[in-house]
Image (cartoon, rainbow, N blue to C red; front, side):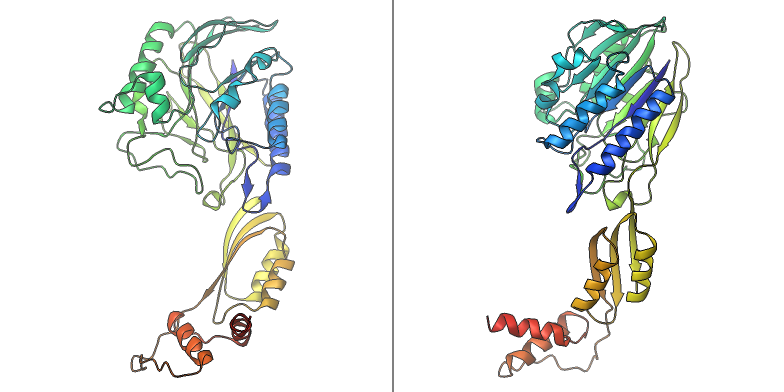
Length: 401
């Protein structure tokens, strides 16, 4: 059977003042197309479905429409879990209606899904944190251990965590008990979770810039050796770059976000993971590149002319632009830059420091004219750079307001 794994949609996400909704509509269309082309039998969405607890109407509408189309109007099961950006109650709310369309929404850790069946598949077994599916045309069951994002409060509520216990121990024991009870070689065994997971002793994986962090110190770091040996593939969400932190035989995959959502992701390619699996055998997976959306770029220039030329030649980008120069940008220069491109998210002027004369006097004569005092102050704070005429006009305008 084939499974499509995606995560970190962040529907409703903005990049500073820029909406990403048009790009998200296109990339959701692309994911649906890949699912259909690959004849996926099951869809897993591993959390951060929305960008915040109270998403807008457009984001909610796109979410429901996308899931319905991914489910082929009930023919193909879709399982979506909540992430640290999601409200578990909001995710759970439409579940009774969603089930009619073959969609299973899981908001809380250790949720127990009500048994149900459709014309095309059925939930044949369900326990807290576990679900088994029997899908028409596939002669073996699919077992899924599911762990939506669990903060400390939820862990205590659902897993009975004591302060002296480590999260690794809690999750490891929970997953092992479920795997030992339900996962054998007669079916496909999958874990899906929205957590910060890494190899023990490995280099720390950076969380996306601007993300709500999961890992605070090492308290919320889950080690991949907590995953039960019966699990053939682990479908993760949270980190926005595609990576396998498991092994070739037992992949533990962050499938990536569908779009670049911060400049720390500049230059990244985005993917969904297509898993080919059967009982008792090593899975194979293929990452399918997503092509929708604007490219995010960090660029540094030293001249206005080069800046404007590059901006005009690269229109379909969002850019964080640093401009290094000997003097501060004038209003006309800023206007020219912004007129050259409609995707400038940040413009960072950087005046090159000048070495101050070591013998220059640092004594301050407070009896001087305030304009001279301001110029001296500005020069001392900016590496010897003189305040230009435009800045002095603004200073005087404020002074005389």
